[in-house]
Amino acid sequence: MSKITCQCGHENPYGTELCEQCGRPLSEKAKESDIVDMRYEGSSRRSQTYKSSIVDKIWNFFSSVKIGVGIIAAVLVASAIGTIFPQKFYVPATTDAEYAEYYERLYGVVGKIYYQLGFYDMYNSWWFKILIGMLATSIIIASIDRVVPLYKSLKKQRTRRHPSFMKRQRIYGEGTIVNSAESFAKAEQELKKMHYNVKTENGAILAEKHRFSRWGPYVNHTGLIIFFVGVLLRGIPGFYVDETMWIREGETRNIVGAPGYVLENKGFTLENYTKEEAEEVFGAALDKVGAIAKTYKTDVTLYKQKEDSLPGSDNLEKVEDYAIVVNKPLKFNGYNVFQMDYKLDELKTMTFNLVEKSSTESLGEFTVDLSNPEKEYDLGNGSTVDLLGFYPDYDGIKDGEPYSKSPIPNNPAFIFQMNTPDKPAGEKSFVAIRQTLEVEQNDYAIKFAGADTRNISGLTIRKDKTLYILLLGGLVFMIGVIQGMYWQHRRIWIQEDAEGHVLLAAHTNKNWFSLRKELDKLRESTALPAYIDRQDPELDKPEQEGDEEIWT
Image (cartoon, rainbow, N blue to C red; front, side, top):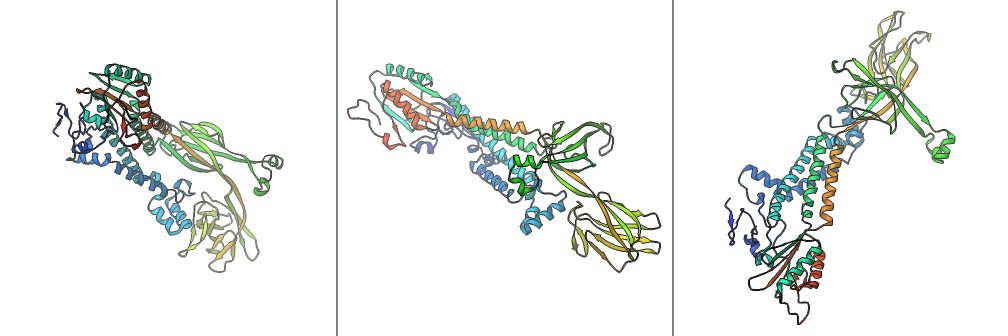
């Protein structure tokens, strides 16, 4: 792009609205405006200059404030949708089929659609992460598009500016004074007392303070970018783990989200408050709930797979024994295992008798391990029982077949085939809790004899390498907020033209009232011309009759 040459002879980049050297308006828009636009000092921005290549179009797309606001709105809408129903983390399910069944059963057709569209795992979905990435890209490009020209303009700003620049400022005054040199020297001293940085050049003064506040929004953006980086890093394995694990007493399981580590549940202990303790601490609440837990813990042994072992092998080495109590997690290698929940008295085994109906004589007893049932049970007298079907959480008949709504043995049901010496072809029986069904009248029956139970510990496994990145992003963001909220970039220009007129102009990015107070204080001690605020009609008039100052 060709450069724009100002009347002062300075060459400005294409797209510049105010000359970098003298401040003259260069564009038609700037020439027609009564008050000059000082947001970016009139400097050229890449998005307003280059528009031909595909890179330019992508850059211009993401640098647009409207596009940025649209992306933010999309993120907010998506986040709101994710709160309509519980997210995946809070659903008591482990498989896709269980998740689908849960949402459809509780929320009907809407829940089914919610699951099918992937809203049940909103914040881990690929398209939500793309939205976050687009928002981060928009913030980065929009910031670079503005902060680079702003930095260059503020760094190169001149002390003496063209009168057209001064007259187009919101605060402007013009007049004649008797002794300009003395007034300028006095003004310089007063401005320094107000903590301004003062530059003088050929009968002109530029007083400036709190320039750093202009970088507040960009510090905000930097903090947001750091925060978004932390959020996106959570999708990379090893950076963030937040998993739930249910482990039964006596069970040994790989720790979810912690490859190479294995946990054994030695036993779960629940201790309730005694009646005397509960009455002292909880009073009437005891009568409502019946029992109040004092503490619950899981005694575990942590193992680690040896370095030379294959994944999933039993080649383990013991790390430590530990009692996981609420708020006292097991800690290892950056992981924390918390005691979060428990379930009491889950069925572990069920014992049955094979009996002859006519005589009620028992032909033998067998026990079914509900976690790992066998296909055949030999009773030792020529009689066997075959397990043809097992339904851990029986929920009725669907499509002519027994249906289990989960793999947890909450309501176990079985289809047995009973083989005896006098019935070698066998007899079939469907056995559930408080229910027995036979296809035809049988001579033998399966009778419930007893059951063993066990407790289950609900553990949460957490690891977060992004926490400090998120905290850093939040800290940087707050620094930017404070930086831009409590300070304002203020500038005051005072200069004398060739005809002996003194020109006064001032600008701030906000808090114009405070700037006017400083100008009034400055004029109390110096013979500077009165000023007007073009956006405050009350100040757009002379102060009193007989004033020797002249202004426009």
